[in-house]
Amino acid sequence: MVKAPAPFIVEKEMALTYADFFRIIPRALGSDMFEKTDSGVVLVGGGKRLEITLGKERIRQIALMKIPACHVRLEFTGYTDPERKAALDLFDRIFQKGGG
Image: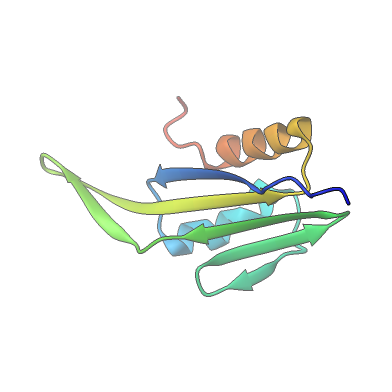
């Protein structure tokens, strides 16, 4: 019996609100065929599964600057290394702020 590889997990701290996330996520996934949950989304298809879970929204303050912040967890199951890299690159590029 062949054991399926363990999910690949990426955790990030992002300057993001839930409203921002749900507005942008279809472009970041390249699809709107996902299931929305209370705290994220699940995309399933072609033997692959990506679950993105958001932590609690909060405000991060640096000196006088206040920035929305949220912990983001991406769990990839059934992705090859190149597929996962492409999905993460698209996710990061779409959610990138400030042009840098």
